[in-house]
Length: 552
Picture 1 (tube, rainbow, N blue to C red):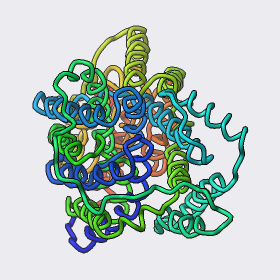
Picture 2: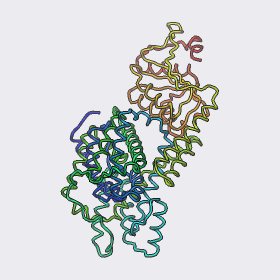
Picture 3: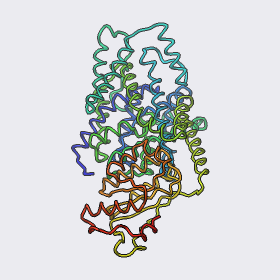
Picture 4: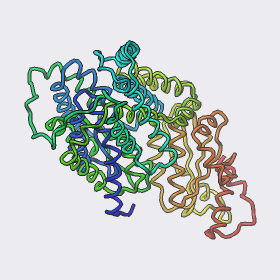
């Protein structure tokens, strides 16, 4: 990707506009206040951009982290959260030094989708008190707090706050469909802030006074006697920071060509960010999927965009604090309600649910555990259930083997007339399961193939395919196609078609007629492709019996 500083600056400005209401909202939702969200976006955003392992990642406060922090604030207070963030930073740096980033590849897609769905539900429910304009009820369980807020509103209904919240959410959701390039979150918040000055909205609570600048770094919150009791929540925060940051970086890679993050360096950058943010009163941070996606879509190509985002937010902190302080809390609740709705990818959920019953079960369990328990337990439950179901699926196979990619060109076994041109065609036979534990290695090994024009994937020996394997296969084919390499497949089993079809992998192959029933047919298709490209002289004679026998 060619670097363009002007596009990076524009992308950073756009992301900052999108990030401002989110940083304020997540700071308020965490319980530490809007200023904590802004401090996190500035300090953690800058450090993670400088030292992280992704050129495109944008970091800051996120909804997922807010979900974890709410019960910590309720139990240990603001100082406890700052200590937890500091300890989590140490743990994430330790994970980086232990080179633990590579293990992100073993998280199944169904766990990630369930985790995301559960987070969206929790974020939406967390906004109910502010959206209804009632005082924040006591409690650390989101379902209990939501119920108490609804009861309070029913006893004394006042419709100004719900009107602002629903208006902001509706404008954001409708605007995103009509004009995706316009930052409707800022437009909606500005409109709600102006409307709140009207008499009809009298009594709507605003953010309140904000400091005009970042506080001086301080360790006044540090209490050595509390280390033992805060270690468990720090582990939970560190696990979430690592998981969400690596997931976000992986999403950024998938949205671009030529970008690839370093997972261990990314953990190191996130660890430093979380070490520094508490010193300035900030909450723990992670890579932010939504802001990273905006960064990529607006043309960012280097770390300059994420640094610009942090710098613009710093200017707002210093220069516009009085204006920001007048934003209604209900408007921020509307922003986060819309954010929660947009987090739910209905198409992805439907595809995952249709892929296999195991994927559907893991998705539902992970989402339910996220809502009823917490995010770390949810991921653990999802991983355990997914692992058990995967082991059961593998145990049912007659042959137990990892993915085995072996070059197997039959030309050397055939006469010269029918020999395949090894410099243009490579064939691989995939043995064993194509599922979450092996699919990513398949992608890494196959995507590195070079100096060929055609890749033939012989899939008759694949024993099982899950949604993650199907997604990886689709991604691999798309990556090779973008490099000008044609991908042909042969021998796809009928029982694998459902998973492959649910994510669109078969559509990608059928589009150019590159799926074949047998390997000899695929070889003929490869020859035809090369002849059409002028790389192989026409061969009037059909493939001889030696080739058919060699590849059978």
